[in-house]
Image (tube, rainbow, N blue to C red):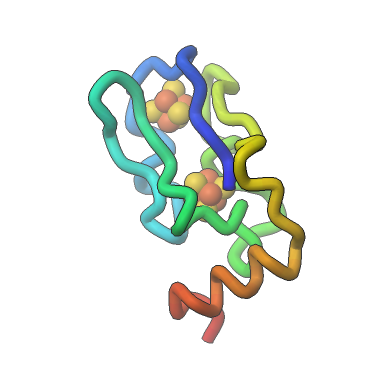
Length: 82
Ligand code: SF4
Ligand code: SF4
């Protein structure tokens, strides 16, 4: 999963760009649901939220250092692989 840091300006550009509906507006800044973020594996070559974010405030989440295979498995579990 990726993680949005405190530099987020709440611009809402990333939310509709996410193919897994993993991004929502949180209390202070936008947040990524680690259970839904596949780092865009299976959908796009590059994380779409990172591509569109104007302030580059989205980083890898150190709490979820997932392999490509784990991300693919998550995608399948979400029903997004077929
Ligand atoms: Fe959504 Fe992809 Fe960003 Fe993860 S990396 S939050 S799946 S747009
Ligand atoms: Fe925050 Fe970047 Fe998403 Fe805008 S695109 S809401 S700045 S994480």
